[in-house]
Length: 176
Length: 257
Image 1: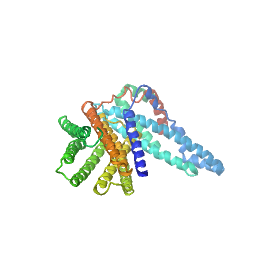
Image 2: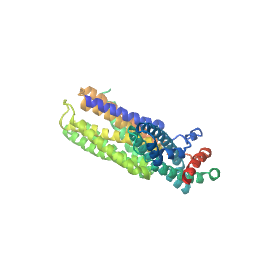
Image 3: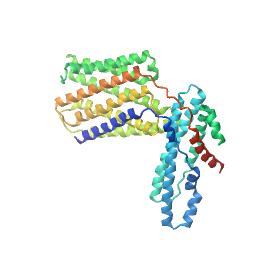
Image 4: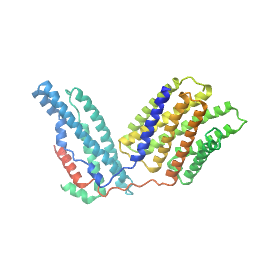
C-alpha cells in the first residue's frame, strides 16, 4: 500500500506541474512587463569578483572579519547574478516573439539572442550554486568572470536584434 | 452502469480509439503528420491496436490467456510509440535551441534512467494479492510505462518552465493530453496493482482511466484540429530603449576597462 501511496502522490505532483504549464504556457509580454529589464551595475559586480580586491581584503582584515565581509560580498554578487538571470529570462521571451518574424535577419538575430540568453541563465544558475557553497566557508576566491563574459555576449545579441527591429531606437541608445 | 461490459464501458473503450484513429487521418489530411510524425504514428497504430484488443476482449473465441498475451504485446508497442512522442515533444520545445539541446538531452536521459529504476523498485516491492502471473506482469508494465511517461513529461515541462521557453499550441496540446492521461493512469494503476482492491473497485478505477483518456483525445482534437499555432507578435521596440541605454552604458564601461 505504501508503494501505491508514493506513486499516487508522485502522479499528483506531475499532474500539478503539467496543469500548471497550461496556466503559464504563453509568454506574457505587455508594455508593463518591459520593466523586467533591470539595469545592472557591472562595475560593482566586477569589484565584487575581483581577485585583487579579494587578496587585498584578506591581507588587511583578520580571518574572522574577512569571512564576515566575504559572506556579504558573496550575497551581493548573488543578487547581481539574479538580476542578470532575470534579464536573460526576459530576453528569451523577447527572442521567442521575434522568432516568428518573416525576415530572415531578424529571425536569425532572435535565435542568437535566445541561445546566448539561455546559456547565461544556465551559467548564472551554476554560479549561484557555487556562491552558496563558497559562502559556507568564504575563504576561497569565487570565479565570476565567465558570467560577465556571457552577459556581454547576450548584450551584443540583444543589440543586434534591437537594431534589426527598431533602427531608430537603437541609434538613440548608441548615442547615449 | 459502472460495470465491466456495460454500454458505457463499451463506449469508453471504443469511442476514444475510433476518435484517435480519425485524428490520425485528420493529421495526415492536413499535412500535420510531417510536423508530428511520432504522434501521427501513435494515433493510428495505437488506436488500431486498442480496437483489436477490444475485439479480442469481447470475442468469446479468444481465450483469456491469448487476450493477456495480446494485451502485453500492445503495451510494449504503446511504450515504444509513447517514447517516440516524448522525444518529439522534447525536440519541438527544447531541441531547437543549440544551447539547451545537449544539456536538456542529458538531463532527460538521466531522468529516464532514474524513473526506470524507480519503476523497477516499485515492481520489485509489489505486495502479494490475488493478481498473479501474466496479469500481474501486464499491470506492472502499465505502472512502469505511466511512471516513466509522466516523469519525463514533467521533467521537460519543468526544464522549459525554468528557461521561460514558450510552447506552440499544438505541441502543448499533445503534451497536455499525454500528461493528464499518464498521471491519472499512473495513480490508478498504482492502486490497482498495489492496494489489493476488490474487483468492483478495480472496475471503477478502469472507468476513471477510460473516461480520462476519452477527455484527453478530445483535448487533442480541440487543440490540433480547431486551433492554429499562434504567431507571437514581437514587441514594437526590443528591448525598451531607456532601460537598454542604462544597461548598455554599464556594459560599455566594463568593456572600456
